[in-house]
Amino acid sequence: MRIVKFDRKFLEDVISIHCPRWREIPLSMRIKDCGYWGDPEVFSWYVDALLSADGKILIALKDDTLIGEAEIVPERLKCPVGDHVYLQMVWVKEGERGIGVGRKLVEECSKLARDMGFYALDTIPYDEAIPFFEALGFSEIESQVLMEAKPRPAPEQPKIEEIGKRELPVAVQMLAGQTRPSALLWELLWGREAVGLPPPRVFKVRVGLWEFVLGLFRPTADDNYLYALIWGPERANLGQIFDSAEMALSIAYDMGATKVRTQTWCKYRGAFEAAGFEAIKRIKWMRMKIKED
Ligand SMILES: CC(C)(COP(=O)(O)OP(=O)(O)OC[C@H]1O[C@@H](n2cnc3c(N)ncnc32)[C@H](O)[C@@H]1OP(=O)(O)O)[C@@H](O)C(=O)NCCC(=O)NCCS
Image 1 (cartoon, rainbow, N blue to C red):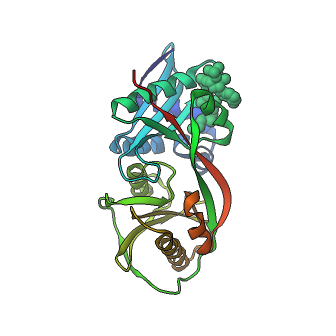
Image 2: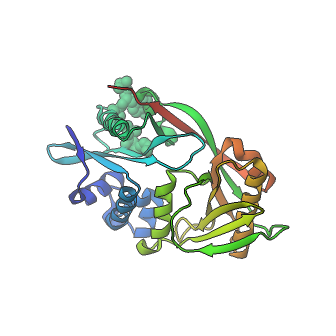
Image 3: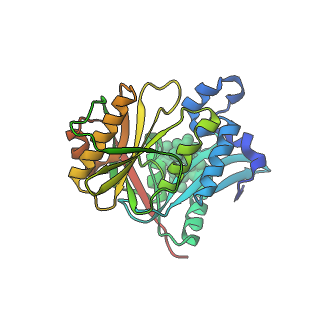
């Protein structure tokens, strides 16, 4: 088995290990079940976004057949857990699991991360994969919480401006919605329509001296809720985070949504609860420290 850089000639092979019956399943169902990894065209667009965010993809080959893949993206913007490279995905073909392929992929990712100048490889694992990450030396360093609320108008209307694609302001950090690095999320947000996913609406909101950026979108056409991404000032306090959560609900209300979901850091949970969000699930944020050679 060898680990090499991903080449687009393996696009369909990547989809086949994530979603083996993809050719027989309608597109919307595959995207709901397997995400960007459920369709070659969508995955190709996702690869463009990942590369533009300085990400890297590795694949595991056995006799030239693809048996695994892994993806990393550096977090170069501010983040409540500090500098890290994010392990976006590691996936091994069924039938090839349990023989060290996943470990080898993650080890090679950690070498790439170190070559990029980072000392932490972070991930949010699926629950079933937590023992795998623990075996590799990852441990929980923070936790996030998936939250949901009913939209409602805000008592005070802040100054809101809908914006188109432009540079994500660098002086912000993600307050909510952080499931991957900011630059990748930003790219993915703006490319949704091109691959048939519901487009986002993005707003710049000013409260006093503070500016927030809010992105709202339906994950797939079949979902009945809006997902909210919230960027805000690096030093935002809980009061300002409460304001940003309230604004997300107010904009969603104007958009006619019946539910809003977001994933925020546990330390911000109180601010979101005060704005009307309820916790659905706690999520582990895990880190492996990258060793020197
Ligand atoms: C999770 C996954 C990537 C693991 O890959 P793998 O090739 O089967 O794992 P490895 O054989 O390299 O195992 C590495 C270590 O993890 C341990 N491990 C792997 N899966 C485990 C499990 N479910 N429970 C306990 N330990 C586990 C192995 O025992 C091994 O430990 P050791 O090296 O100390 O003996 C693979 O099962 C997979 O693709 N799952 C579906 C996708 C997924 O969940 N991806 C992760 C989230 S993005």
